[in-house]
Image (cartoon, rainbow, N blue to C red; front, side, top):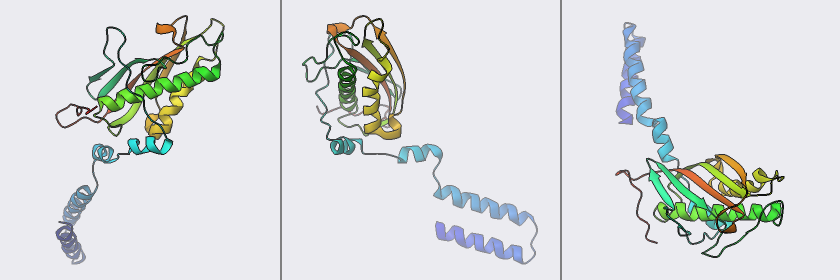
Length: 216
């Protein structure tokens, strides 16, 4: 295909040098446009072609994701709507064991609250991987996270605490982990949790508009 187009371009240019009419330029430009579009994918195609191995990135970081936490009450942990994956609020438990309870500004430090936020992020990623058929490589972008921090009325360190989760998303996904977010302080959380975080991801679907079923 490329050879045929190149030959056609040469013939067109030869006609021009022989004093052919100006409308030959239109034919030459048309041939060049076809030649270029045959080599350069559309913006959408480029987005599809640009993939990363986030599973390998996890291994490089030495991150071992926990078992996705079960839903404690009457809700589902994950839900697909279009190409977006919604993750219900995650607490800082690990493999079913509660971690990091208390209240920031009273009996919990900023450091421990930030660690709790990171653990919430790990639970979020565990759900993302499970929902995407056992891989993180279907993630296109971490769109948004919302954090609820159990904090005293005079505490003003909520946003810095939530960075524990935000930093994790950037570590794993790079620029695709940069997200919008909200962070609010609350008086109490379920199970006396220190922090709760939910998230929204854009994910790459199968041709049938579904995600593959996880083998887990």
